[in-house]
Image: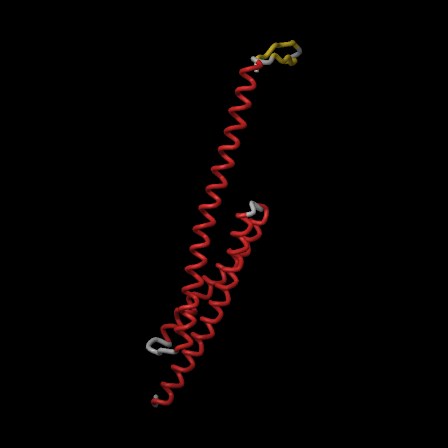
Length: 154
């Protein structure tokens, strides 16, 4: 193999990795947009939208995972080349991923806080209900059981 052939192989490998990196950045951009929409839904307590957004995120993550091996193979083929475009794309992908991870952490904290607030509200309702029953005393209800009238204390 001549030096020109080796250079051509490296250029092809580099072209392949740049293409894969561009696709990865596009998918990460799509994931970031879905993550922002998910964060907005959580902030506005529009929990009905979370299922759809999580399904869409799962699909994008599945595509990212599916392309990871091909990207790794392309990176091995282009190892040692210092393409400014490849480096720029790697940096962009890394930054996108960091923003997505940070947003996911914020969303998790917000969801936990909302869940805790709801739990406390339900607890207050339960305490008020018990207090109301204690104030009014036990209620007596009657029902028929096996044809006989019985009294029950609630």
